[in-house]
Image (tube, rainbow, N blue to C red):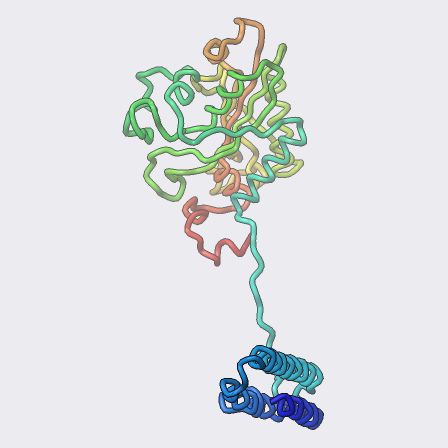
Length: 336
């Protein structure tokens, strides 16, 4: 049996030298390792070996099999590596396979730009929960119980006193509860209102609100911050206009317009021929808000503002339907 094993080793080495291509190597594999191959036939003789010699002979047979398997694999790998590629397998006239690269969504792009502008002005980013209590969404913001926004038809209530936030002003309250002035932060995030979906409304949209609280904050500071934002967002020639308005959480309050980026303030269909486009609401923090968070009366003043990210993106890129942001239509998204 030992002599047979040695003879097979010698025979295999000779056959391996003569195997020059993939086909001959496959034939060699079948000859020695196949179900009816030389090694398989030899193993069938193992039961007839003397009991005391069987372990040693069995070990040598296994070593022979592993040696043959290993050398054939190495030879096959070498042949494959060195084989010349046939020119007729490649058509160099075919176009390459194009893979689309990822794009930043226009809302994300706009939000990042808004954040970057305010960060450059010294604001920090603050975030808070999207599921809120009435205290943070209404009461602390001086929105009384009889206010229309607290009606069940105008807010997404989850259960009594728990709702989906309708603005990121809730984060302003949470910051002031835990932090003593000076405070300078913006609050980006999703908000929810049960509006009927149309070209200018969505039940979910994105806001960025801002808050600055310290001793001696004035309305002129608010105008300065928003003037810089408007110029950096829409261009250096952009003008701003502040119109008196009303918000329960600010006093005085203002709506802020920018000169129309389409007609440069001359008047067109986009700006309803007024030359102005509304972009956000702002004002000085109402003293009742400071009272709700426990700040000493009369010690601090503050400014606050809030804008819809969709609104900013629509104005900046000339988009006329808010629904386009959420439909995942690649024909629209690839433009950005």
